[in-house]
Image (cartoon, rainbow, N blue to C red; front, top):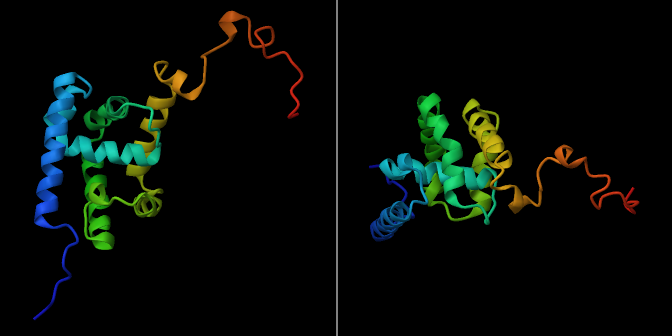
Length: 167
């Protein structure tokens, strides 16, 4: 008779987490902070959100910006995204006995991402996030970027013409 290792996620903890995720999803939906597709598929939204926040972690950025950025992926590459997330969960269960979202340790999730960093799935998600987050004018103030300067005559006569001591 084969003895199977005991899962680290108890039934009580699982029910608590899924209940909290459902309540959180409903609350976010009521406030309009999540895109409509994320409300229809809260499990997929949670998985993509955790992945997005692990690839580009910014606490000051609201969840909706990550989810809005990843929405086109579901329209264009739903199979790739679903297969990639399933593979990530499979790897997480094999290494940690939990789905990717259930791993609380950031370093353990990072290790899993390093294992898949050369896959088409990871490259696709990372590229979408890169352009969707850093090319979003609504988020530029979070990064200290004031936007393009050529319309105002460049940076030279706008306070950036001093001799920099770091050169």
